[in-house]
Image (cartoon, rainbow, N blue to C red):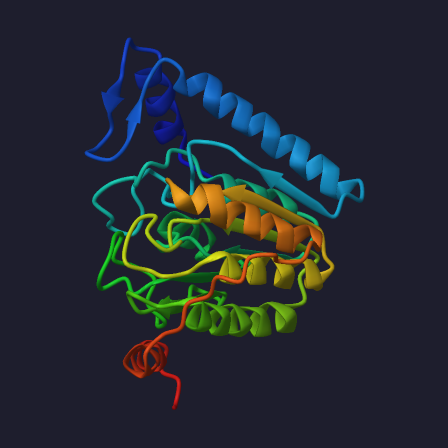
Length: 273
């Protein structure tokens, strides 16, 4: 999936004393190889589990992966955005050898590496993210559809609340249900949680909802951890897992979006009022 030269470069640099920065965002140390090897082992085990009938697997790994493209930074992005190897992309392409696969990404940022990797495939990639004209990596517009119309980008305006996020999730699952995958791979990012990373205002309600929608698909799921740096991990991730395993959402926190944000959301996605 990644080029041989890129893989060899990462391992060569990681074997040095380190830490060494690959770019202003992303560094490797002499512990990176162990982390990546363990992540690769988790990928293999996750695929074995769902192939043997397990319905839901969640890989809580670091580093994240969805910005890593074939040769490193993807689609002209200036950096790797903390990512080195694309875990979700690996899983999707391995499962797709014998089954129909969809990738869902709801990290705050567009999964540009995943989009690049899946561009020429039949794998459906649905990505919900903040308006790329306002945030890194600057890709993931609705007109970027892939070679086989297999890429769907759903944009959120900065400041969107649970209501807009839930609407975007519903739109995503309309496409996923229509595609009818045999496996679902999820890039689960929690940096859109209220006060985690930027001005997005998604709370427990939104992340529990997307977990519940994934569970309702009733197909085997492998989720991998992407972004999330503070409250997104401590609150958003547990809410997502509760939805994924069918537990009720006890928190009542919820945010609403203004009419201005709803209008921008519709315009970003070319949706009529």
